[in-house]
Length: 115
Image (cartoon, rainbow, N blue to C red; front, side, top):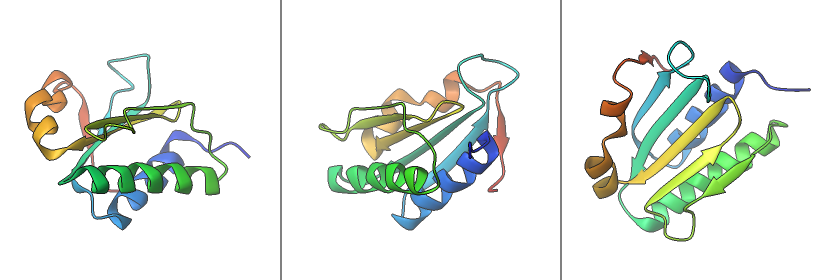
């Protein structure tokens, strides 16, 4: 059974909340980009928390029969990118999230309320 992007989004948001990720922002980018349907952006306050969030997202998606296509940045735990196909998750360290401010880059996207 393949999960649709909304189901993946729900799983991802729940996993981030489970590990106390901060300032979870889900952006609907379907109308402005071909790379994915949604970006999910959050942050942790330490490298161990960033790793814990990323691990929980991976574990939860796989438990739901989803497929992690790629995960980058896990070793340094400053900006972990998790590619789940139609959903791309960005788990930042708080300082790096403030620095990169990718929400500003995607300001044309609609913010999705918690699903």
